[in-house]
Image 1 (cartoon, rainbow, N blue to C red):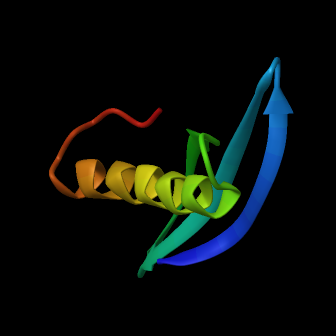
Image 2 (image 1 turned 135 degrees about the vertical axis):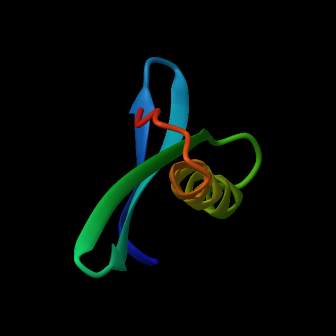
Amino acid sequence: MDVVGAELTRVGTQDVAIVTLVSVEMPLERHLAGSATVHHSPDDAIVRAVLDAANRRLSLAAGDSHDD
């Protein structure tokens, strides 16, 4: 799994970290996104956003058919 991009943006009154990941398992390439609000540290929010996206991948691997 690789990080494709990461950004901090403002949504309403909240700063939000948004990341995109790519997971390649030939022949499939899955693009995943995750987000997290910034509470104390932008770096912490980016890490939590990566974990959010990675958890989506784990849900897919476990057979959960949801793809938000």
